[in-house]
Structures are given as C-alpha cells and as structure tokens.
Image (cartoon, rainbow, N blue to C red; front, side, top):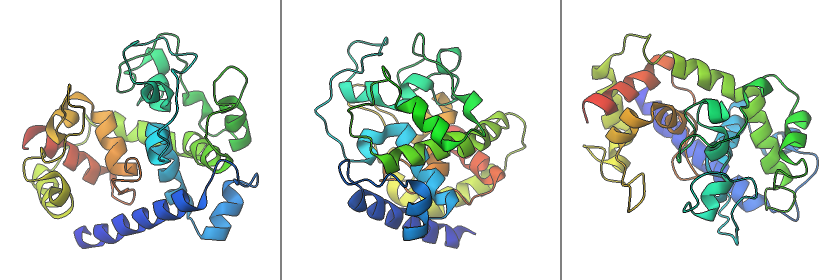
Length: 253
C-alpha cells in the first residue's frame, strides 16, 4: 500500500499539468467536465480532487496572480490579502457550514452561507449558484471547466469529507502505522519533524504538527485531495489511514 501511494502522487501531478496547461478562461468548453473527463480520461474520483483543490485555493491552483480587488461580499478581516477573500473555503469553511461552522483559514466569515445542502445536487444547479449575480464570479477568471470541477466536489465529494472528519474522535487510531506511512510518503517533502515547509505565512508560520492540532479539517482535506496543484492527492487511502496520519502528526511530530 505504501509503495503504491507514490504512483498515486505521480498520477495526481500529471492530471494537474493537463488541467493547468489545457484550460483557459477564454477557450473553456461549455461542455464541461463530462466531455473533459471523456476526452482526457479523468476518472471521477480524480476530478473530485481537482474540485476540492479549487475550493481550497483556486487562484493558486489556476496560477491566477490577479489583479484582484477584495471580494465584494467580504465581511471579514480587512487586512486580508485580496486573493484570500476570493477563496471558497474562506467564506464557506472547511466544514462547509459558513458562519455557523469553523470557517476557513481566516475564521468564520459573518453572513457566509453553508453549502451542505448542495450534497447530491445537479452540477448545473451548483454552477448557477456560483455564477449568480452579486456573487462576484461573473468576471473573475474561473473558467467553465473549473466551475464543473468545483460543482462536482460540492455535489459528490463534500459528504465523504464531512463523514471522515466526524470520525476523528470515534475511530481507534494506529499511530505506529501513521508514523510508518509518514516516513514513507510525507517525510521527503515535509521533513522528519514536519517543519521543513512553512504551511502558513511569514507572520503566522505553520508546521504539520500545528496544522494537525489546530485545523484537523484542513489537514485531512489536504491529505485526501492535495493542495494547489503542488501537493498531490492521496484519495485512495482508507479512512483509518487518514486518521492514523492525522493522529501521528498531531501527537508525535
């Protein structure tokens, strides 16, 4: 299992190369993800990981540096970088509960709606909500293919995320297995102590240990789906394997 995970990482990286090179705001096909998946052989589970990464940080994932002004509906920290105000997660939260939940990287946003009611919805319904007047995405460079991926994630991917996070305190974890998996899969990039990469900012540095303790939802999201086209997805792990990694990172790094 540990050996095969490296192959999954490579597959995820290849998908992102295809997506980022092949998509453009001006040339996106209105046919959406169905045609894209058929044309490029993108399995649904991998398409969900792309949608999850876009939900997390689409400006980073699509390499969109701007120019961005502050999102017109942003009611949070006024010192936040403009691109941060456009990230779906910073309005609707890691737990998809809007201002009634844990929020995104900048905390709960006053007035932000939850998205859990979209589970099982048709993708065209979800896309219409994203593009509705006043939401701010009428002119931003979020192309048709990207909208399809996000809609797929919200309709078909968020339920599994909610279910996994709900089991953090329920499932008996195996931190030894988590440590072995970390050493074989994660350590090369993140270091033996999980502090090789700063996962935060210069003002607010973050290591894997502090992230696992402070924001387990974000940790699980990143491991399961990847991040920003940089960290690969490990979507084929079992629930217990995600939770073993989370427990090891929070307690033993």
